Image 1 (cartoon, rainbow, N blue to C red):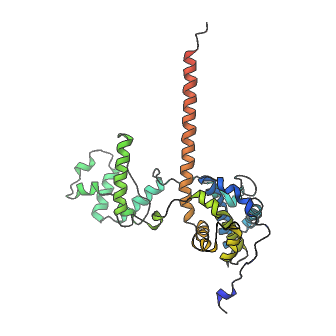
Image 2: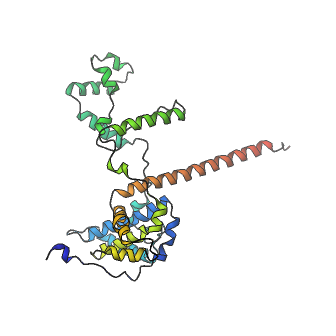
Image 3: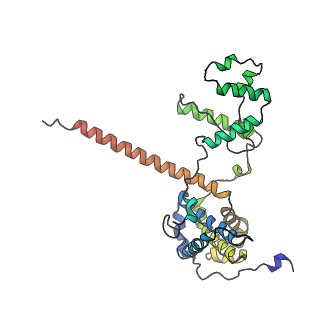
Length: 309
């Protein structure tokens, strides 16, 4: 008997499943979707740990199982409420990382290390001399025929095949010019080896469609299958997600199931997180403009008040 034949198939839906519970998913924005998927990833990852030959973090077993029960009662989880306020879900509240962001010290360390590893002994000595000399004229005192090329060579090649590259922005120029130059630079990067990773070819998530085709309930059913160490046939998923006929078995096999599985993997949620960052940043800008306008109105009102003697 093969391993495939031993696999248990779940042909009956669980009692807790009710598609109507997921109707609110149609109104979720990117940040809310990001949180809903994050907590399910936490549950999925820990279920894998619990079933591994050497399980660990046993103190999280209880909160994870409570979270699964909670999601089956109310699948649209509320942030910072029990059981999702447990340490097992702490990373789910991290601020999404922007695709364009300031360089961190950790980034600088890794770039510096990569650059140094590519130096010849002579270049390493030159590098050390330049970065340790406090005089702004140190560079002109160094005799090196290739100095000009060395000064203007970029570190992008040292970061390849990394998909995160450093970039310099000169704020003395207006936004229009900076945007044009960024577009030119981006086109050049895309033409380079490794400049178009496979992830970049994927379309941005269509969150409205996710709600209509039942991505979230499909994720929860896959979690249920993982908990029971069993597989749910496409026909059962189609029966669960498409009672009105809008989702058939072919769509389950080609679209819905692969996407639901991808959302439980370590890679795809970062793409969703980029949309979540955009949503959060845009709301922050709206609040900032509103606050600035209120402050301006208050200051204007004070200037119009008659002098009180």
